[in-house]
Amino acid sequence: MIPYGKHHIDEDDIQAVVDVLRGDFLTQGPVVEVFEKAVAEYVGSKYAVAVSSGTAALHLAALAAGVGPGKSVVTSPITFVASANAPRYCGGDVLFADINSETVNMSPDALREVLLKNSNVKAIIPVHFAGLPCDMIAIKNLADEAGAIVIEDAAHALGATYPNGMRVGSCENSLMTIFSFHPVKAIAAGEGGMITTNDEATYRKLIRSRSHGINKLDDPIKVEAEAFQDGEQNPWYYEMQELGFHYRITDIQCGLALSQFKKLDSFISRRRQLVRNYDLAFIEMKNCRPAQTTGRDQSGHHLYVLRIDFKQIALTRGQVMKKLRECGVGSQVHYIPVPFHPYYRQLGFRPEDYPDAIKYYQEALSIPLFFDLTEKQQRKVISTIKDLLV
Ligand SMILES: *Cc1c(COP(=O)(O)O)cnc(C)c1O
Image 1 (cartoon, rainbow, N blue to C red):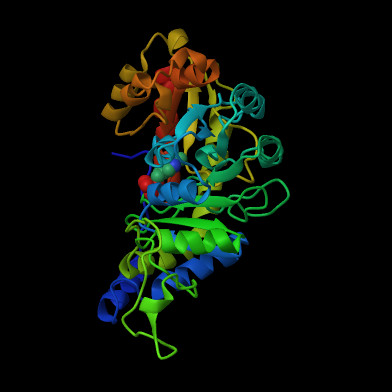
Image 2 (spheres, rainbow, N blue to C red):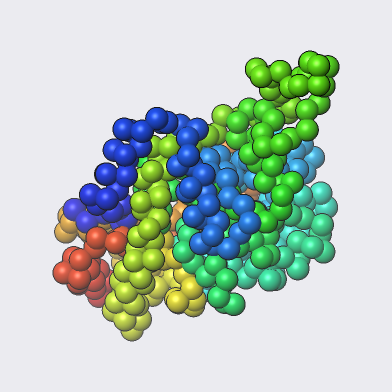
């Protein structure tokens, strides 16, 4: 069975984890910071904060942006549920701006409409879908007009670049960018996430809030009478200064992630080659086309999504997935639009308010794309799909 996505682990990765296990720290040791520094340097941000998952990164980023009761956050309807859930964790409201059909990213025009109709938008979370960077300049301009903070959900886009050549994560047009190191993403930590930023106050807040809200770095002490005796700080003393969480990542996970990170560029270039092969194979088909065709040299290529006209081929998507499966080809749908989920329906969202997301959803099918997919396997995927769709 060829899955739609899969991690790649080699002996160096295994050795990296063993090295951590043989060392002094399983967690809160030196490898976390080494990994943070490596990612910050690579993406071109001043700071990076590693956390236990991409979802934890979104939650802390939303908190650091000041999302809370009475404040709203705009995100894309075509994303993993975590992008929308993070503002809900903070007691904030979620709004969705429909996608652009050609990029599958949040449409700046739809975002403008949402911002016109809603005051109190505290943050915007654009999602670089399948690794294709959003139009960050348009989004940042609209955010500035609305007085909103931008948090990029780059869970799909580690290694991707903007049109000007800067890397996703550099936060040129956002306050924060988040990444995920779940095994289906660009690099694997088992579970893990990261927030990058160029803003020192935000960085300090993130460092505190991933560890219970306890003072970190050189945060000023609040209750000096408790902290000091005879002008010296009491050696046991620390302060929980705000309500934080336990979202730390372990050194074991960072050992793996750091080893994976060294292979990121080769991971991306392999994915890019596979995408080129798929594009060539599908570009001339009648009832099926690549969901994204622009920014092929900029994307992180997390997913390869086809848009299939199921009515024309007289097969349902379920039937196609089943037939592919019988031929040993895995597939998946990314994503069920977030407002379709019962939790969001119950909050009053109506799927029909996002027509481009619906149209996309009706046609979308993700097919296998991962580092270890061989040319032979890829040819099999292509011929199986072509046989099915004619
Ligand atoms: C995977 C993913 C997340 C969440 O990351 P986890 O590490 O699984 O918590 C958030 N947003 C998007 C778009 C994702 O694909």
